[in-house]
Length: 114
Image: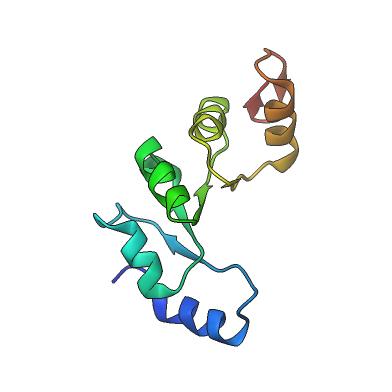
């Protein structure tokens, strides 16, 4: 399998109050909620290409959170924010923060268009 769900479960048993997510790179299985329950994960960190409105809605309805990686472009940041992900991983936190806090502008900030 492409993840180490056993490790997530071990962490949850050792530190029950610590949020733990499953990092998943490839296309998700049909039932992501069941996968997270099996791994005892609170959330899912998934490649930005695999984030859909249906995934976010399904996981939120099940009380799970969604993180997306790695978003560096303005379109990716806006799309993920619009989908309602709970966390976005980026290589340029300052530029992403400026972009997301300013809305849609045209000023260049690092590698991200603001």
